[in-house]
Length: 106
Image 1 (tube, rainbow, N blue to C red):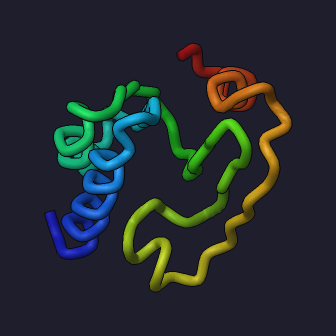
Image 2: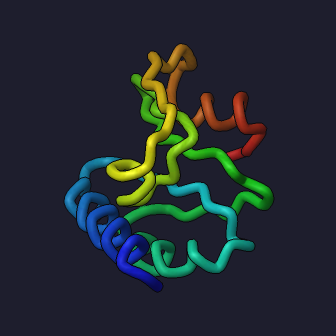
């Protein structure tokens, strides 16, 4: 673990803990060791689904999708120069988006 990892996970896990009335699902690549810590921090407040070979970096809601090259880390979001875009989710909901765009059954 390093500063970059611990900072993002602390903030992310805190945000997840505060969203008590929201269904949250994390899709992670379980084959990547750096995901173990965040998984342990959020799994009591969110569903965690292992998706082998997942490399997508996105936040998907029923209304919008944030996607791009940035890792969802402090460095990826605040330091590095990345290309990301927020678009309207044209699917009926977040689950349908994930199922149709990533071919992942939730």
